[in-house]
Image (cartoon, rainbow, N blue to C red; front, side):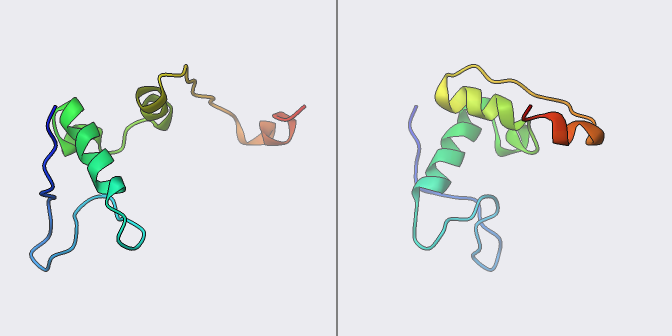
Length: 76
């Protein structure tokens, strides 16, 4: 897979999706590679964080759905 260094920007020159901290370029390149892997930026918008972590690390991931009243018991 080849990733170029062209990023989608608004008319006034701001990057459309993720924002780097200072002049870090790796954030934009990683997001572009992830979008290319999944077909488009639109297909990765608003996904599930645990699936992203699985894709990036290869480690198993899980989603915990908790009720608000169980937050205090989660660490027990």
